[in-house]
Image 1 (spheres, rainbow, N blue to C red):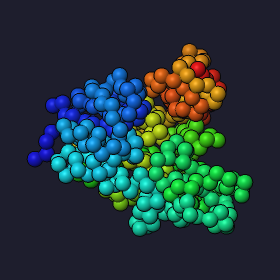
Image 2: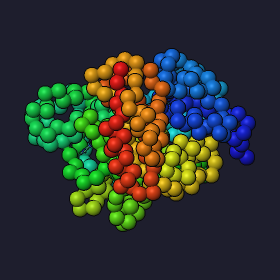
Image 3: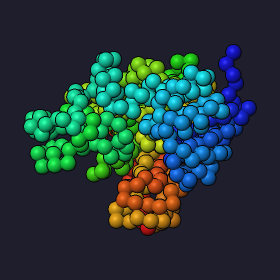
Image 4: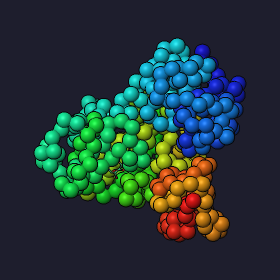
Length: 380
Ligand SMILES: Nc1ncnc2c1ncn2[C@@H]1O[C@H](COP(=O)(O)OP(=O)(O)OP(=O)(O)O)[C@@H](O)[C@H]1O
Ligand SMILES: [Mg+2]
């Protein structure tokens, strides 16, 4: 019989000490799981709330192997981790969720896109590029989107190439070149799957991005018709089943003018587009991730309140110890929930926190979120 993982202080190791790990710990405390975090720096969002904290490189074979040896379950809050060490831990009986062979595919956007093609999952067409790809070839592909195969995050590692002027600093390392998609909306669906193969899916959300390609504004539910909603959630479930992932999966989608849906990319972990679930849904994405990796029944995903979420991004031109201007005023608006990630210093476009505004009326939630966005400034 499976070992019971709840209530007996099972040891959960998280690779990465950022805000996603921090919010996962906030939920894991309620399950009395013992959490050890590994991160490169002494100070990180998780460092003050993890039960124990290990300074180490999550991309280093020896560091990850050593970190994982005494754990019951290992999970990640970022894909760029040492896969070989995780595979070895898995062979030695440590549960690693998401499974290392799936992380290996997802962390490389080239392999990830090929996976969609191989599994008949709709996605934009693509090709691989490298430092030997000629400028003439790039010119013939304009407009296109260029993405580093590994290591990109929060829009870093993504170039929208619209004219030949944008080709000046085109990535020269291994990348993918995708057709530029004239989407009408960007949608995201969070879905979870546990070891028993049960899945649970959240209602689709809609994202708006800023100039740096970061999620600036997200609302739940997405303003789409019921047919699109059903197709989006069905697609997300089919993607998680194709991967056979254990854990949470955020499926980013493009909605085309003709109503078609394409998968942009996935993240095998809690995701920025699921932060609203903390206040808006019966089970938050963080609790759901825990339930799935601990082989527990999945929680109800039903929405209890509509919501709009904004990221609190460091204002450009400010570098140093963070100050949150306008917070008391923002908190005076109805339905405002603040999440600061405890990062000591800010810099331009750094994710410093998020605010979710809940309301029974989506338009009111959005209007308040817009006011909050105009009220709060993260400066140094
Ligand atoms: N093929 C495409 N056509 C048009 N726009 C695209 C395309 N691919 C990406 N984008 C735009 O760039 C954004 C970032 O791309 P993508 O999600 O692949 O990168 P990322 O850096 O992994 O993002 P994040 O980590 O923020 O989710 C997308 O949300 C979308 O706005
Ligand atoms: Mg993305």
